[in-house]
Length: 122
Image (cartoon, rainbow, N blue to C red; front, side, top):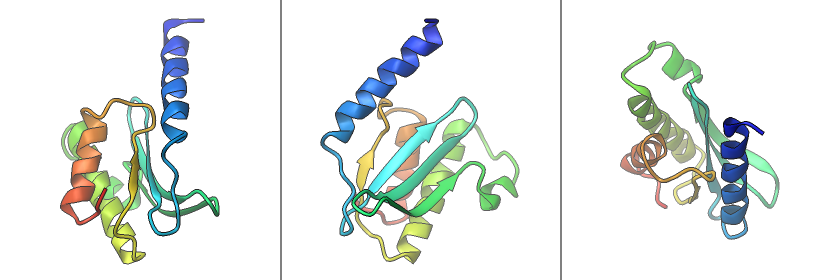
């Protein structure tokens, strides 16, 4: 197994460990984060029903139409803001944050800060 496979496996193990404790319920759904080398994706999920209630990513039409604005960290913050706007429109105010096995640092932290600035509580 190459180095990339070992890193992905380690992240997967961390994510499973976090998911044992973090569960999205109807009153407080889970904000899940996934990042690739180029993009970052976030969705708000009700795990009991298996439904995605709101989602946003760097590929969202609202952000993609503006073109690339800033570095990846700045783009992640915009994704957090967009997700918070969509969540508030769907009457979601509180979420539990699932960092997806990533460190709470850089793009993941920027996404969380963007969502908090727009009014999501976690």
